[in-house]
Image 1 (cartoon, rainbow, N blue to C red):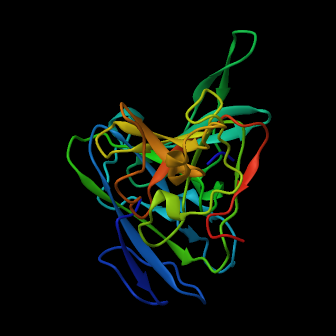
Image 2: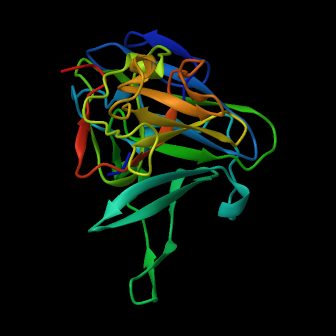
Amino acid sequence: MKKFLLTTVALAVAGWGHADIQPIVGTNVVGFAAITAPGGVNTIITVPFEACLENGAAGMLSDLVVTNGLTSHATNEGDADQLVVLTTNGATQVYYYYWNKTGFGWTEITSAMLMPDGSSQAVTPPAATNFPVARGLGFWIKRKDSGVSTVYVKGQVSTEKQATTISEGLNLIGYGGLESVSLNAIDWTGAYGVNGISATTDRILVGNGDGTYTTYFYYVKKAGSSSYYDQFTNLWVKSTSSGPALPSSSLPVGQGFWYHRRGAGDFTFRPDGQ
């Protein structure tokens, strides 16, 4: 699966409740995370939790994303909030869509996939109750209403370190941590950069919360460049009129992002350093 809801994290032991939401019960620490999801834009999220009862296992999509407070509809998928997951069907990347159906929760949507010969093939995702989403994988929520809603994810706090495969091309990923973190405080071993900001430099797109994105480039200075650029080497920078600049803010808990892999081959994103 390719990789892509949290701002305030509340941890809990088995048996603890949060409003109307029942916690997953397990032998380890479990909890909820709340993500602010503005209306009318796609909010990229990442999962900081694992499935309960099985240490290190992926959680099912239906269990991880709580529908409380979100927009549902009984018959029309276009009038409900949706979840969209970028995944791989055979050798082809596809988007799996789910809608919040009244009384049923996250329900799969059959969508069209364009084939190499120009034909269209109907793709039906697996049921959300049978679609595993591991910590660090990313997806987004499409809000139908214009107002801001709080989206909750829940699960078992992981005792395993994150290991997420980043393949050539576009990936939806995130850092599955329980605290906000600076982009450059994460271990990015395997990211690729060459000759400053170039066409072959890996880049990420981080949402600004209003439907826009900021692009950051993995910086490796050009051979022979001034020692001034040493401060940016092997870090994520944004491009400005005066040259590279470091990010000015941290990634909120649960912030997912697009990763555009321009370097050759896959690498394993191990943000915990293992």
